[in-house]
Image (cartoon, rainbow, N blue to C red; front, side, top):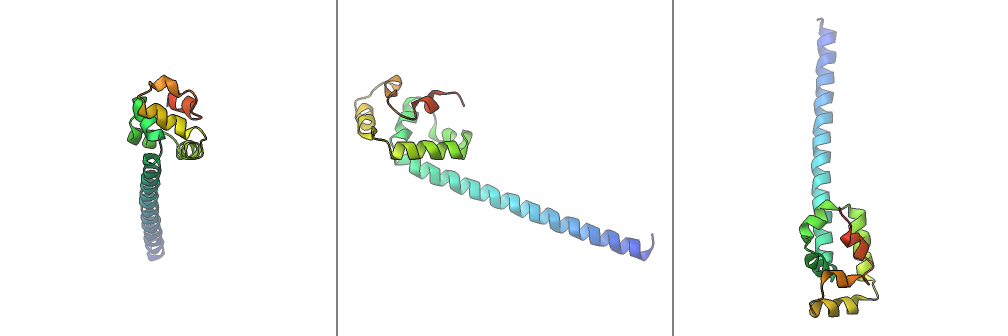
Length: 115
């Protein structure tokens, strides 16, 4: 190989290393951001009766947060937070209602459907 070919190979190698480094940093940042989003969703979930209904249905809230798409969890949290039946839900939870008695919950179908 002549010197020009060696120089070009070196430049290509450096560009490949820079690209790989950027890709690794981007993936790491994305994972970190995803973990933060799930933590934030978990905090919001913990403030709503939805977390207790999940437990009543035998679902692990942590698993729920990691197995479902974020947009679906976000929608269910918004529905629960703005629900007009929150008092009814709280009362049913205090009274120890069975899981199938939450049919009034707007999230009931989503919580009973398989993942």
